[in-house]
Image 1 (tube, rainbow, N blue to C red):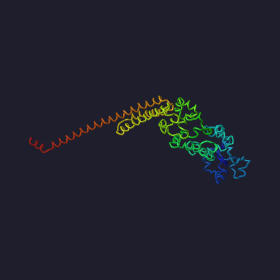
Image 2: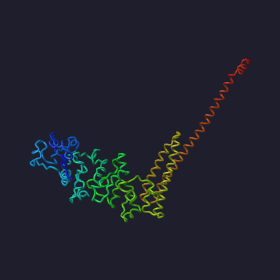
Image 3: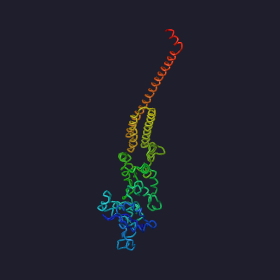
Image 4: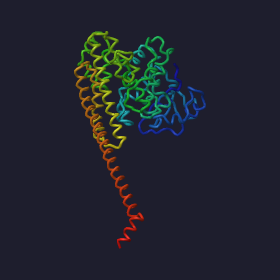
Length: 420
């Protein structure tokens, strides 16, 4: 693939040299057709250009001279187009130089090239495969933005789409013997929902698991380690479980066997059931110890979930009636925590451990339910008391009314007169 003028705005000028106000490169290239076209607006948004970039930093030549014979003269060091084969070394000439890069961004890593040569991309590239990804495929050419920029091709929100430009194309990936549905699967996953929908930038994307410059596919031996960088407690439980040794012996990747890799759905209790959503039945046959254990755990989780729901309902009823149940609400959160913990503990595949968490939650759910019952009983008591009070008041008012009518009646008045 030919990349004409690929690095017109990629690298820094020597320290102390500012961006040229005159740029004959852009004066010409802004009127050309793509991919030769490079506008001033596009260049101005490039992070390298903002740091003092000039087209000649990569292409050589003299951008201050309007004479093409001089500006693109060999005497001025003009290199012309940058081929794909030259890209990694050209980028690395600056980005691998710690002393040079420190002047612009002391925190920027300078091991990108050394990582790239160890990656699947880098190894294939070293053997002459120029179809594999090089720097410009991921970072673009003349409009490179820092990763924190939401419009950057390597911003976490955009990484998956960037990778899919190659890995989602069946035609482009033909001959590599790897699937091309990863992006489609990832787009439906819980990780993508967290990142793209909820805006959680800590959620995994392609580079989180595969690396970026040192990109490599996680194998059976490493996939659990990749997942455990985020899911630490689950990994510890799995390592202590009877599944660990069995999975290793059968060369099954731990996490992926149950959760898959790119299409990771929201985990549900039904994964432990014996129905359509079960993952346990993939290995365990009806009646064996694992099958029965999964069935037992599933039943207990559903029982705790139902108990919490039952408690929620009565607390809702009491609260909507004006009763104070805030303390029970706080306690109820502990029951939900116990349910969450039990759902994590299943990775240890130990029924007793799950039972312990479930029982803790059941105790809380029962206590909060009784608090709701007590609140409704108090409400009923208050209503009865109010009814008695109202009845008493009404009777008093009726009696008072009769008394007033009695003392105001004519016979009462005459009796009073005669007595005088």
